[in-house]
Amino acid sequence: MSVQDHSGYRERPREGMSTKAGLVLVGFLIIAGALLFTEHRAHVLGLLIWLPLLACPLMHFFMHGGHGHHHGGGRPNDPRSV
Image (cartoon, rainbow, N blue to C red; front, top):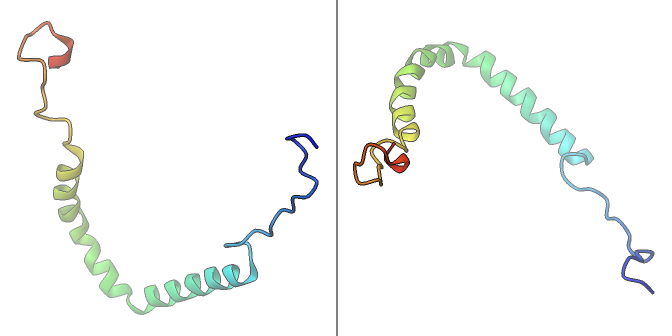
């Protein structure tokens, strides 16, 4: 018997979203989300105006990771100091 012989191996059936229970769950979540949005549309749309104000500090906090970390010792011609 060689190392590449897989005759005794059986592939297990895939579990997850391809099963009937997974499809029912996805369908339920889509319907529940649509109903929640239609019932609470005024609240959701009223909060959308605050998203830019929330996005500004979050982007500042998460996107400024590279600023102020110069490790070159301040030499102008050193590529590490850029």
